[in-house]
Image (cartoon, rainbow, N blue to C red; front, side, top):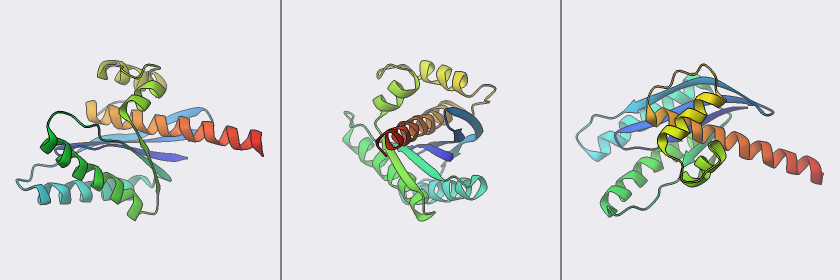
Amino acid sequence: MRILGIDPGLVNMGWGVIVADGSRLRHVANGIIRSRADSLAARLCELHAGLVAVIAAHSPEAAAVEQTFVNKDAVGTLKLGQARGVALLAPAQAGLKVGEYAPNAVKKTVVGVGHAQKGQVEHMVRFQLPGVEIAGPDAADALAIAICHARHLQGRSLRIKVVA
C-alpha cells in the first residue's frame, strides 16, 4: 500500500510517501511544500495546490496527518489548525481515507518512546527507510507519520485475520 504522510505547517508542510508491503517499508519520495504568501488565505491556497500536486504525482492509496497539539500561543494553534484542515482536505478530495495520529503516538510507533526528540525520530526514519534522502525536518516528520500509519494498518490487518 502506498501511504502519504503529512506534517501540517503554515509555512512549511512536510510530506512523505512510502510503500508498505506486509512489514517491509520502502521510501518513494518526500519533500516540503513552502508557502511564501503574505495573507493567510493565499498561504492556504499555496499549501492546498502543492498537496494536490503531490497526490497527483505519487498516487497514494491512503494518507495520514499529525494531529495538532495545543500550545501556549492560541493564535498560532488556530492558524496551524487551518493548515491541518488543508492537510485533511486534499487527500479527502482525492478519495483517500485519512488517518490521524497524535505526535506522541507517532514518536512511540517510530522510536519506541512517546517523548522522543526530533533527531531521534529522523534517525529511526533513516533506519527504517535505508538510503533515504530527507528533504528536511518537516519531511522527516511526514515520513514518520506515514510509517506510523503503515504500522497501525499492519496491526489492524493482523487482528482482523486472527478474529476472522
